[in-house]
Image (cartoon, rainbow, N blue to C red):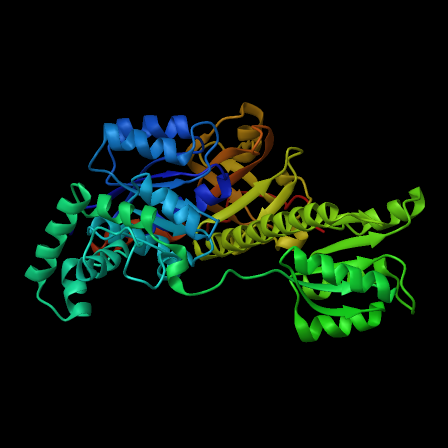
Length: 499
């Protein structure tokens, strides 16, 4: 059996932390030796465990991921560091690589890519997302002040993408010794010690314009029933380097154009002619197309403002408006839209991550009501997510001490009360919805929001029936009778909270 890869995980989201831990521990060659929800404890865990790989969220509370990375480089130089982020952009890639990371993983990628990334970084590869080639650009030259020759720049560009010397040689149709020769020249010319430092130099000095692709311009649909105002809007937006892809004068026409032009943003007058006013049309735009809407109006009376705000607009510009008003409203709307999209992608990744693990995951809010169940939790408890949501967790998680048959406080309730991690227990019986008793192992942890406020707790629970059957198998093979006591034979335990 190959030597285990020892992993430390840091993420401030307890659900993600639990999901990553279960995902990694399901692999025979990987072992999680510590986890942490903040940077300071993560640094202590690395000093204590000296892991092979650290998987760290970039935006950790307190001491952030980049500060943890710098600390790890000092105290445990052999530890490979994979940064984890939900923000899929070239700037983040360049930042983490320049800081000395061995790779970057996206939370929006399939969970299996995390496992692959851990193994690849241990093999000496620079692990980058699939989008990295686009972020790194298409030109082999870094910029016009590049001190390297064309061939040296080609070699460095491929090395920065994480390719080995052999892979670079195959792509350039040269020998591996030739690649090594060019790399030695690169190190000497750039005054760097290794390929990681050279890769960072490449990313710092890369000319974004070398890709030959002009920056994308914002595409806006204007919905305005006064022709002169619409014309003025078009002129002002063009001066702001914004493309007006279409103009509509009714809500109905706006919805039709949304299908055709697919804009990034809608500027919507509140009072429109036709059956739909701007507020109704904006609600339909959000529901059907998930595109941000900024309201335009000459009416600032309280009733109009209150009704407009109920639709959660991304901005509000009063007529007559100045160019700076438009610029600020559009910038704020797009910033909020990007944040919301990142949150959706992050939540989608969380859902995929939790669905992919075999362990049951149950989350509760601060009132100890169930706020989440994954598929494995539905199976082992007998409750569907829809049935369990909002119920007291004691209804869904009935636990007995396996030895005394006394009822136990659910681990997430204890984690909430103590505001501390509840360590794993292996002496409990879960009473499912039908009253059957299932041996389980579980652990729980409190969940804190970005401001450090307690927002709930999460429990990870493992069904031990299969493991116990496997433990009994050798005894049966030696001729001893296999114990066949039913797991639900623990006395009359009526299910609580049944509908």
